[in-house]
Image (cartoon, rainbow, N blue to C red; front, top):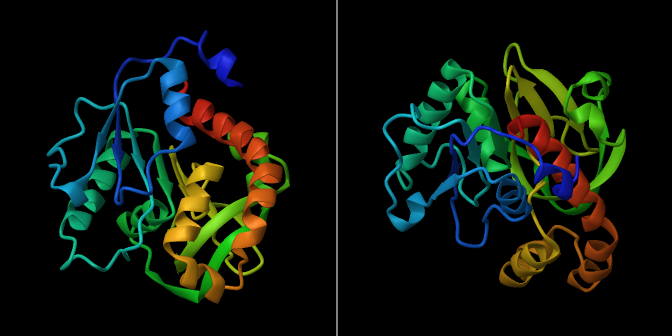
Length: 242
């Protein structure tokens, strides 16, 4: 389903709660999708002293974005503990949930799975491969069996008990999973080309240390982000569009 089709789709007006952890790591192309549906969304920024809600009773879905912190950094960022409790509440209410990068790790922790440093940083454009279950999934089955995605992470997690493994990369096995109506994605489905270039400029040393080349970003962004646009629309419409 594309953006022009989403505009004609009747969806619940119950707002989404969107949790953002860093100014540079905003909702990106996800915002274009909720705006296209007319779906209200409340973006809360705990890093800027926004208060997280005490309940999700008035919300119809939850999006938890990425960030440079680790799930265990609760002393420095005590609101991470609150986020895990909100994710658990959303799971209990059977709300649709999308966790991206850190959001996926928080979802895994909320489901009782360990989160820990991975084999090394995975930064840049790398291919993803759907698992057999991913090809059969009601949402991920809309995506190509193999596609390029942008990554920027160093932590990983075990597959939560009862979760369905959806996608992997060569270095990180658990790139996407589903638990009932909750999806956790290690890769940055939401990142626009502009966002990616800003991340690389602000963190050039880390970017280069991971073996990525800033000079190649514009060409790769131009090549791969149009397909990522379509994939984001498929995921958003499948999870929140009805």
